Amino acid sequence: MEDLAGIAIVLTILFSAILAGYESINRVFHPQVVQFLWAVTAASLIGFAGNEIVAVLRINVGKEIGSAALIADGHHARIDGLTSLAVFFGAVGVYLGFPLADPPSDLS
Image (cartoon, rainbow, N blue to C red):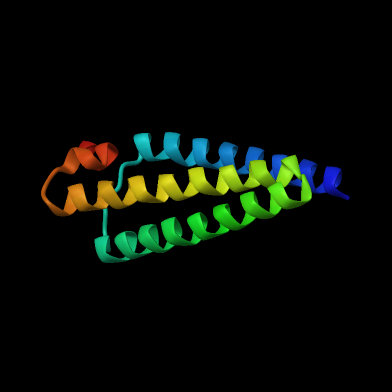
């Protein structure tokens, strides 16, 4: 079952990467002004905290039961959390008047 779960995780990550790539390219050609910075900021901080908690839990449990897949998933959650933190700093930059903190919004 762990092998099947690992395959499901890899496929989910692949789908997520393809979707993120599509949305990134779409935003370059169809820029949008950043709105609701308070919501972006709140979501990014919640995302960071939640992902870090999950990362620590998964890594610790993975080490306890000897599951490389669970440890890897924990590291993936940690990277997701750091990405959320980067979004937070981008939102703060936009709020402070630095439109290049969210580069595509400056193209409109």
